[in-house]
Image 1 (tube, one colour):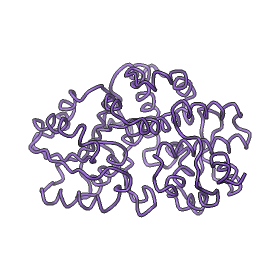
Image 2 (cartoon, one colour):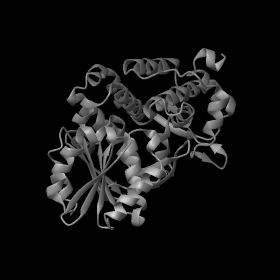
Image 3 (spheres, rainbow, N blue to C red):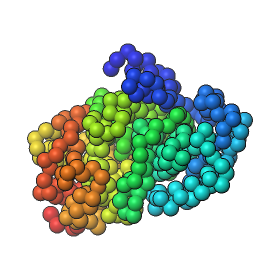
Image 4 (cartoon, rainbow, N blue to C red):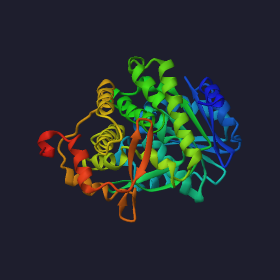
Length: 377
């Protein structure tokens, strides 16, 4: 770990660079009081802002954020859509476009994503496409969005049952993370976020992975100091990958560990399971495949499975067959020239892209996470 990284881990600000130029800051704090000052740095005094949020988050934080932003700009308005993955689609985006057009938002105005991954992805996609692109800010309020989806500029919406099939790369101007919002997060949402957090350690940083498991008790009780270390640790990993590969041509694909089969499970279960839960299930299957290929030990899988239980993340899924999941995985956007790009582990903390995984190997991996009566072991 470099001196620069150590220094940044003791601060509340990380800067994301692209082509060696600073693009936006990630501010990590414990309240919203610093938000106006950060937004004012973006020269918004004469601009209009539209806060995009969902029906759940609006009840908790919309008024507080609106009141803080009102003195910063010419006008603050809001767009609230029904909470849930089912509303992350082009129909919701179309209604947002209509609002922006009626309120005469122009290219100098800005959107503000206040919420979790669904809100951030949808708002970012709208910002990327309205008037061929306007600026936006991320204010992530869930663990999943704070450690993953708010960083890196990947935006998108689902098309029919196909997850994130329509999207664009569009970097935010600012990510403002108030970790205290995690205190109001339902346990299931927090657990789902931990699925992505643990994934970061598995693919990139063994020491961070070990730290997470060693401090599981403090993280589970939502100790703010432990949460801060968790968020900063994941942000450092995500930033490093994004800076190296901003448009997912190489190393950034490693962040898709657990997603190939996880997305298929998520879709086939009609989004009854949360995204982070499905990623964790997919990660467990990928680890089993890595073990079959002789790259990691059975003990590594057992330790990961225990971690899932500690963080109350499901390690099995019912109601699916391996064949159905494999077929669904072939409709995923990670397909390339008819070949699935599968992320495997050379060791804990070191992932790589593999294009040789067969249907038979995927069936073996899926048998590891599907309940016995459904997988017909």
